[in-house]
Amino acid sequence: MTSRRKEHRRTEHRNTASKNLDRMTAIEIVQLMNREDRKVAAAVTRELPAIARAVDAIVKAIRDGGRLIYVGAGSSGRMAVLDAAECPPTFGTSPELVQALIAGGRPAVTGAVEGAEDSVANAQTDLRAKKLTPRDIVVGITASGTTPYVLAALQYARAHGATTVAMTVNPRTPVARLANILIATQVGPEVLTGSTRLKAGTAHKMVLNMLSTAAMARLGHVYENLMIDVKASNQKVSDRIVRILAEASGKSLSASEHALRQAGHNMRIALIMLKHGVDAQGAKKRLAAAKGDLHDALDE
Image 1 (tube, rainbow, N blue to C red):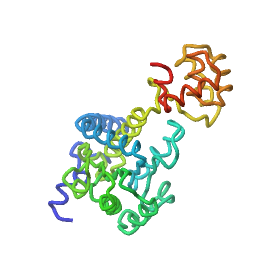
Image 2 (cartoon, one colour; image 1 turned 90 degrees about the horizontal axis):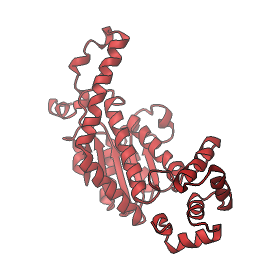
Image 3 (cartoon, rainbow, N blue to C red; image 1 turned 30 degrees about the horizontal axis):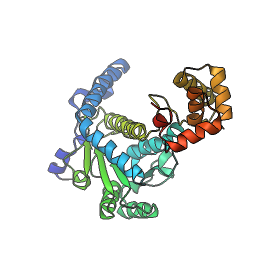
Image 4 (cartoon, one colour; image 1 turned 90 degrees about the vertical axis):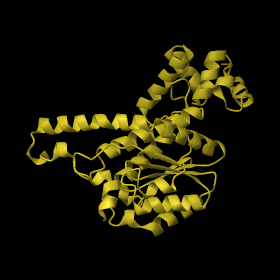
C-alpha cells in the first residue's frame, strides 16, 4: 500500500490516545473508548444533509417500484443484513423491499469468509441475481472506502442505471467516485487500530437506522411515532400492538383488542374502526378510498 493511500485511509492510522492500550486498566480502557465514541455522533451530525438526500432518494426509488439494496463486507455487511432483516417485522414491508448482500453470503453473517471481500466477480454475480433495474437504489457500505466487493457492486449498479449511495469514514477513497450520494462519517482513528467494528461500525449503524426509519416514516409505515405496521412475531409484540392501538385511538386496551380481532389483526383497519366507530368493512372501504393513506382515511 502506498503512503498516499494510507493517508486517505484514516481507519488505518494509529490513535495516539490508545497507544498504551495493552497496559491500561479496565476502567481506563472503557473511559477512553467512551471518550472516542462521543466523536461518532458529531461525525454523523456533519453528514445529516447527505443522509437526508439519501432518504429522499430511497423514498423515490421505492415509490417508483424499486428496492433498497445494501451491499457490504465483514462488520459493515453484517450491520446491513441486520437493518434489512428488521424492516419486515418493524414496518410490515415485504422482505423483497429492503435487501442486503454481504460478501461471502450467508456464512459470512456469523463468521469470516476468507477472500470474500476481495471478489469483484462475486459482487457482480450477486447483484445480477437480484435482476437490478434503474428503479433500484444500491447503498454500498465500506469503512475503508476501498473494499473491492463493494466497489464492484457500485460499479455494476451505476452501469445498470441504479442510484448509488456510499457509506464510508474515508471520503477521499475510490468509493466516493462511484456514488451519486456520499455519506462520509469521519470518526478518526480507532482505539484498536484498523478495527472498524468500533467507531466506524457505530457510525454505520447510526446512519442505517436513519436511512430505514426515516424512509419508512416518509412512506407511511409509521402513524405519528407509532409502529402502525408492526407484525406480531411473539406474545410481547402482540401485547405491544394492542397498546399501540390504544395509544393511537385513545380507546381502552379491551376495546383495542376487540377491534384488532374484528379487523383480522390489521392495525390500520382497527385504528379506523376505533376512531370512526365503523365496522371492519366500513374501515376497509375508507382505507381503499384513501388509496392506503392512513391520514386521509382518518380525515386527518
